[in-house]
Image 1 (cartoon, rainbow, N blue to C red):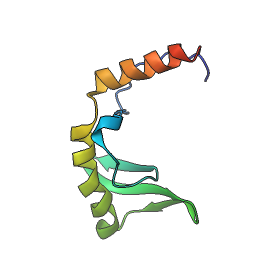
Image 2: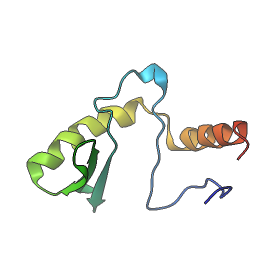
Image 3: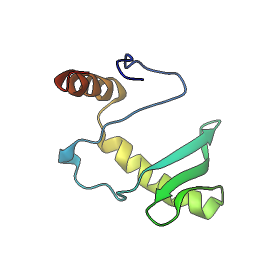
Length: 93
């Protein structure tokens, strides 16, 4: 929805990984879905297979292992939202 305000949502957390953090371990998007704070499912997109959902513990373990270092290198949630607001304003949206 163009022009919708950026605001925190209780069920979604966004983090911006700044360029100074270096390259991420994966260049493909993925989503970790958690229940009671424990990752249960990973949704990953690949150039050859599109989006895939997997709940096998060994498959989920790999992105979980990459997630914590990424989160530690990312801007805090409030700073991430502020940066997204600034970029949006800079681009006239």
